[in-house]
Image 1 (tube, helix red, strand yellow):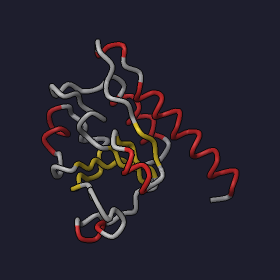
Image 2 (image 1 turned 90 degrees about the vertical axis):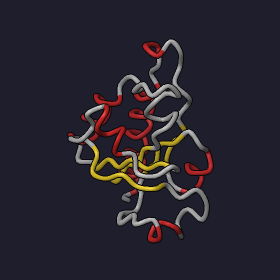
Image 3 (image 1 turned 135 degrees about the vertical axis):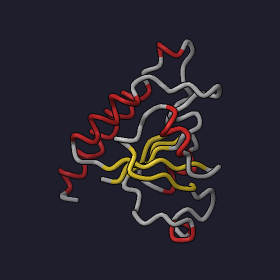
Length: 133
């Protein structure tokens, strides 16, 4: 499955700290055979990949379509269809299958949203398996 993660307020906080659980959840998803992509409304965020050493997990980074979501995938050079998205903006989750993530909890070490996201992805996969998709 192609899983697209937003960056700001999804993976990182307003003051550019990595949300707890990102490395662990990304590792588990990759071990299950999923491909992880990052996208952002402000462009490809390779600086986040470098800063937080996410290279082994992230296949590519893209501009995120902020309107006409499906129609703009080609225009933005996104070669793969998102199967599941994780974003703090509801409109993205309404355009593609996925889940809306809450802003990081403070203090940051109490934030468990990435694990809720992981459980939501597992539930999504279970329904796809049951429906034969």
